[in-house]
Length: 146
View 1 (cartoon, one colour):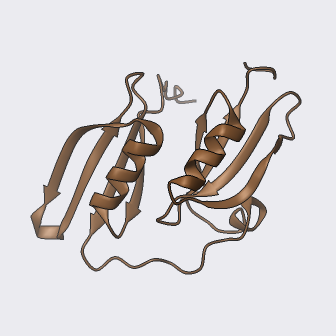
View 2 (cartoon, rainbow, N blue to C red):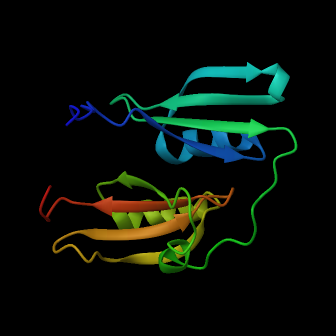
């Protein structure tokens, strides 16, 4: 049997948007990401920006000319789970309620209000960013894996 691949860490997640500049501004304001590396791939009419936090969490945001949204946003996480592909991004936060409220102030859409998670002692919520991507907020301070 072949040796298993050894993964050290998840490096980054990539999302596609129709307005790169607006998305970069939103994620910087909402989560404190810093711009690490903007890039352009001229032959594909694509540009992007790699964002990073001080702890190394990476988010790559890509805009390709001619890209289209793939339909109406799901109403909630269970409906989103019926879609194949990236389901959501998840960020650990200290206070789910405060983070959820702040993202709504910044233009996110409420998709699952703050509540206890199925995992005992964990609190969670979901929003959709202004570009349609689902974001889970999670506080594991009191649950297993804290």
